[in-house]
Image (cartoon, rainbow, N blue to C red):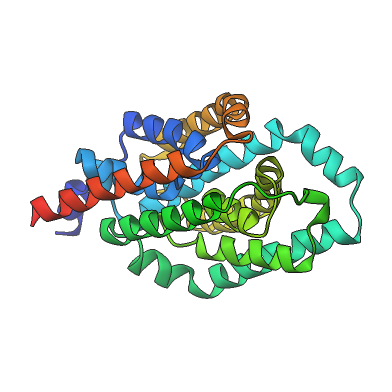
Length: 275
């Protein structure tokens, strides 16, 4: 009986892995929620991916984040080197205080968040909540504070924003951009702060979850699809970085908020029609 049940389980298709990898790259860099898209797009399109074992989907998302994290390190190497060269007490404080809240919340509540807040309905709620926060921060206008002005309070607010972004659909990029704008930072400086506080979390979470995955081992017949997803995510992230930097420089968050609301409405409509 166990073998028959295993055979009935759908497998991670190679094309699904590639498409989701290509989607994950730009979705991680834009304030639209990469985790939300990886979850709801297969659900909306009724792909076999949505019926995969939950642990397998989590493992694949770790693989996608690994590809994105590697691309960010490569693509932002000059920016990271400049930040490391000018590392001082203020910057260390910014990194530590923005890292601790999401790290602590993730460590304590990772499983409850994944099991209770990863459904289409809760992802739609996260998309809406993030949109409201982004729109409210953006409507205040572009502030005048520079990234060099960031202090301990700013770091803690950015950290709390990243902790909120552990909820699928909220978006780490969107939450930190909204928080930085709400704290009065200029739009371009908000983007730089968002990248600087996000990279340690992305790398740290990927390393932790990757270590757990390595201990468990990959499920049978998934290595090829996992590798394809990682490569696709890496390539898509690198390819998107130049375009996204041009797009997000001194631009409003309102179009992204509108897109997120439209996606949430599509999910809710599908839920209502599906009964």
